[in-house]
Length: 284
Image (tube, rainbow, N blue to C red):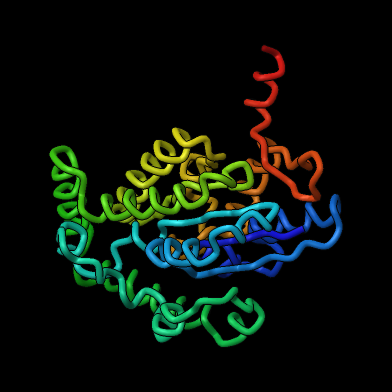
């Protein structure tokens, strides 16, 4: 069995013990049922680069039994200037999110060797950067400034789709169009929530886009934003940005309870089926 995983830090279980991430939990469960599972991780991966990757893979996506997409976290984050959120021509946002590994990640065109990747100290570097970012918000901007920026974004969004949100919609559309013929193999996760107010607003807008664009094309969509938002205080690491083991377990549980992995006729490949939809179709 082969799985393709494209996404951000959550897809490899940032900051938690090995095997506790939702992807790793799914892999362990499927190994018990179907034997050996090979996973191609393209992580951490940005949306624009995902478009290029899928253009390269093309028909090769048919060789995967399951395709997991955890996208939008990099784009739907205020980690640089506030102006970049509303600048219509700016596509160079959040260039330092991954610290010293940014350039290496940008050049990546093969599946990630997670063992090598994690032993290079990415988690430690990223954690230090996030701690500086969090403390910087508290010291330099304060809650009142953060609230002002949030209010400005929310007001602007009433009259127009923010350029950053528009960027996400365009790239998501390209990604889903590339995978349309194999949509029964795809699990698309909506962006996860985050404690920081402005970024969470962006994630909420992203959630709407992922649901709208995914469902109207017939993709299997996991509303992870809603799953985590219901218990936000208990699902994050101290950085308020990444899920802890409890949060990953909640995502895993939702997937396994609501989706069925079944073998297609005349092939050795698996497809994914939403259980509720399957029962409704059979009752009719």
